[in-house]
Image 1 (cartoon, rainbow, N blue to C red):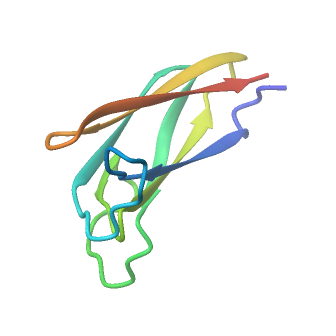
Image 2: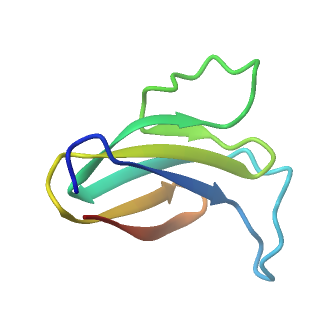
Length: 97
């Protein structure tokens, strides 16, 4: 039941044209939600980072970054777009029941 306590973790990886992880990539990734959820935090695993973990954007570390989205209490779908000025855009759909 979507009660506003449901969360989902999005794990973004920067990959090359052949699908290989780009461990040197440090591009900024922005997570944008459309639908029944919102971004409540981001992380990249870097203990030395001074970037806010409560924002919707963060620089990748080792080619990876993460976002946590929380349901707004309404059942339905949420589209999460992951955008980067240098890399373009990708998206994933979450379903909160």
